[in-house]
Amino acid sequence: QVQLVESGGGLVQAGGSLRLSCTASGDIFSFSRMGWDRQAPGKQREPVAVIFSGGRTNYADSVKGRFTISRDNTKNTMYLQMNSLKPEDTAVYYCNAEFNYQTYWGQGTQVTVSS
Image (cartoon, rainbow, N blue to C red; front, top):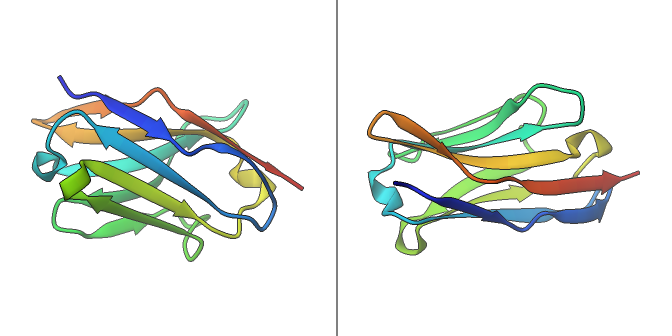
């Protein structure tokens, strides 16, 4: 069983930065993929960024150039550095990971960007 715990959310003004962390109970080196999704009020959950085991990354068009996903295998932790935040980035951010063809989710962390 994989457990994922997010941290780092909060309230920030537009233009500010936050760094989210996702710490896994297992060895993330064995995860084929890890990523961040988000869900804004009244909207469907959407993928934000993903990082594959080989280090390749993908980003949603809405966050390209502003967000950076990374992982530290020695700490079993994945990060999402969010810069130049906009009010439309306000959402609950969920960490996810794929292991043995199953996808696991964290409980989510709230990010609120004020204008």
